[in-house]
Length: 107
Image 1 (cartoon, rainbow, N blue to C red):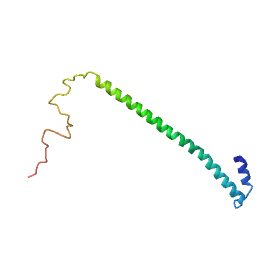
Image 2: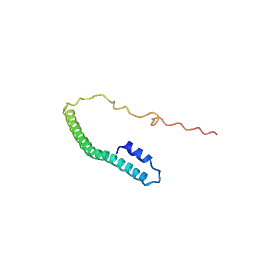
Image 3: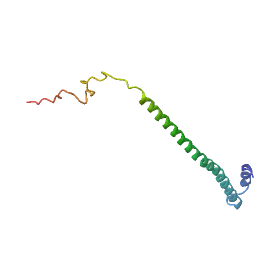
């Protein structure tokens, strides 16, 4: 019996009748069976996706390690006069070298 036929058969009976209750139970069974199909699909896809993600992570980590080794094997570039020895990297509002002015006392 298709869904359309079940709906037409259910519509023939009043809500309190046993036939109507049987039709409701059939609707619930059909709903559960449809949901179980998707649950099985998710149960299969979930572990497969996890394995694929783990493999991708493993290969990306290997690529990162190889890239680091290539960078470390390059000759070091000497950097001279990049930062003068006297300069300070200080924000002028946060730290100043001048004493702060205080309010003058009124006599």
